[in-house]
Length: 181
Image (cartoon, rainbow, N blue to C red):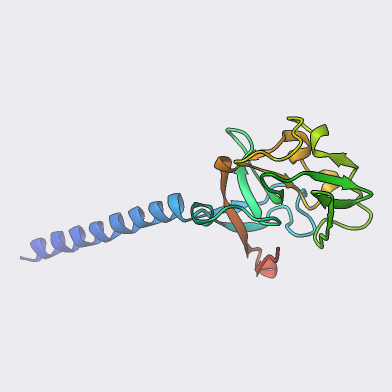
């Protein structure tokens, strides 16, 4: 009798573990996933080795917005984390370290220090030669503009390649915060 009770207990625990693993897989695949910041391209907002949670459902329900911090597939082996600067239909330009969207100056409070100047550019001078950002794409920049591989070199990012939005740092403990946009 004790043997049967032991087998039932083992079977029940096995079911619990399988259900827990299946739920963890589903949550990580479809809802949230962790990411580790790699490099200084988002400083001073995010630092190398910051650990964050990526919300994968946000862009299934809405489109990216200006200044969202997004994670996207840059290559088949590498994901990047950058800030959305330009949206479909817009013209982007940097002049004298100031951002212009459709000719209007846009204030940014997160783009590095005053020492880190962003070189002047216009969208049509960058990879792809677009006059405006086409539908289904966004223009991204790192906050550390002097040390970032972003839309200035890799071109526009297809929205379909965006994994999700991130703004929650959970590690290291001294940096736990929700990042403001």
